[in-house]
Length: 300
Image (tube, rainbow, N blue to C red; front, side, top):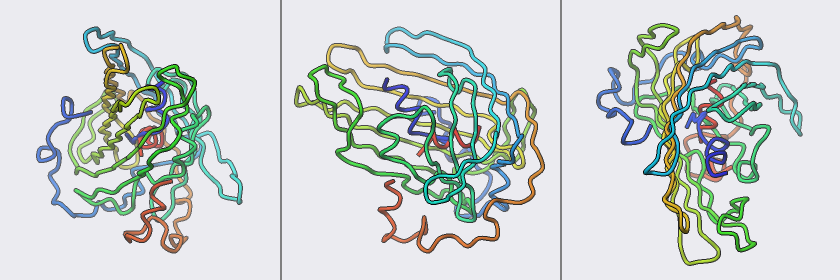
């Protein structure tokens, strides 16, 4: 259940690799900190009919026992959906993301960036976090922003079996690390943008005075005109009661891609809503409503 929660709340999809997987930030970028990446929106194509095929590997289990699995996932943009209030979002369908079965995810891309509006099937916790921003435009090297920071919300599950759902604090952070060359089965992309999404959960067990900490760190590479070409992700959950904790490493790499030409960026001629996702401290509450799943989910 906890692994499914991670997948539903980060990206992204998160957008969203941990210290054990992640190459150092100083090795990741040939661009200078603060430099804007031109035509940032072109790294996130979302035209209906676009299709990506990935091959993946997942290693999971208790810390002392790791099981390796292999899987495939096909992602496609299938259409749009109108939400309450008339907001139109883009629908991404995945056949088997992270080896967890089919899902639909909902996003909107406009002049301000990309916002995640949830998924089907989703989780009670995800519904308390969405919508939240995954990527800001223009992307800037070494730019970080808080995607959400919610405290004392319903975890949506009774982990310790005492009849009461646990409470949890959840925080998500997204960072653009830079540009670098990346090679996957589909080819070599010399100027892929590398993004890290990091989520932390602090789960308070209701039966005992104890907090279990879970982390999910994802590193994803996006190619201009293509979208997501690779991601690596590590999920770690500290021991709960009598278990030994759990660790999961996931990788997906692009094998084939078919990108449909876009008539234009949705909302390209729209101005960003007043104050929405702007760099103002007064807007911080808006961020509290990543990754990656959102990060990775959008990028698929």
